[in-house]
Image 1 (cartoon, rainbow, N blue to C red):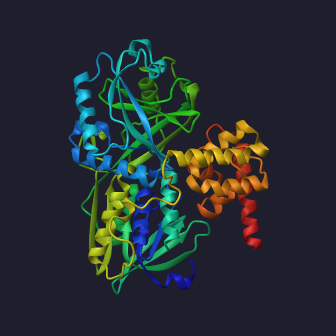
Image 2 (spheres, rainbow, N blue to C red; image 1 turned 45 degrees about the vertical axis):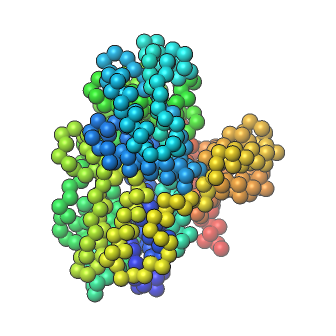
Image 3 (cartoon, rainbow, N blue to C red; image 1 turned 180 degrees about the vertical axis):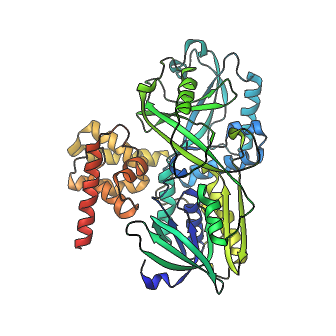
Length: 515
């Protein structure tokens, strides 16, 4: 950002580049506000990249009587299936039922409520199945191939959903600044004067804003205190969720909800075609800057899985682990697994400048949270918002979304034909599916450039033009940014593959500097 830009006050400065901040930036920019978003790390590098990758109502939350949250989440599930159809897709969940588990009648009642709270038929309803004859039973232990239930929720690439929101916000005029940290804030003449620090060279500069939105996730209370010099009265409870990634068992084509003796549930979910994701845990955490899975969590997830799968899983089968911190509202609940996933938005004037703090929340409800934040900004800001109307994000599809599954299938076929000319039929099919899954409709133009250049894939499986796209248009700077956030192809790769991507990034930067 130039100094001349820095001296111009933006209407809204968003602190935090996770899914909530990205949603706020998009909604605000669409409504006509000038927006700056700053994120101290890479985009979605904290909570928003370490989720269980689900857009869901939260079936287990019904046990905690959170009916309003479940209903709101299910309504959002239907909306996201429509407006982000390139990233959000239905997934069948299987609930095997055996002795010692919740009574079958209770599960059936819960599923009935889940179906009817959604107020939508965007996904199929639940039903009972016989796992002795259904293919879903093949992956289970023989004693669990009896009665079971199925229901549907949705899976999502959490990082790409965040990036999609930010790219749309940028297209609507927002400025996005990752690797930029807020170091101080004061109010002067009714405007925030924010001092920001670039991570690459440590240089500092100032920006002015009429309204600040704090969506810093696990650091939200720290940022709130930095902004006003006092505590907000809200207390965050940091809860660590950890996951294992293993090679996908051959018969695992559905997700499974696995009830545990302690009353918790663990998911095993098909992940990135070749893998399975096992999670999650709920453990209280203290330092959001240091997060990793513990030995106890690893053992818990392995034991949870081995109660169900016919083929046992051990440490030797673990290809990757990840852990993230959920910033939850502290409601005084003893058990971390039972802490509410709802959120709290606090908007006020601080010395005549606008301030919104966001605490809590979950991936599924980011859009409604963002909409409410911008609604509250409108009640106190003096800035003009001559743009789209309230609620526009609920019915306006992203540019890369598909009209229907037929359009998606046609695009995959078209790209496959383009790539087959120089990759061969088998490889072309694999890459066509991946490109469409990652980029939606934008895959068409990207594939066209790849086909024209007849590029060979890198060791990681990406094409060189994809790396350039991620650097130029998705704020990527390192191989980790690319291989573990913007895509998940880094699982199981050796150092040489990461070095190749870093070398490609360095070459792209060199060309940029020369230009």
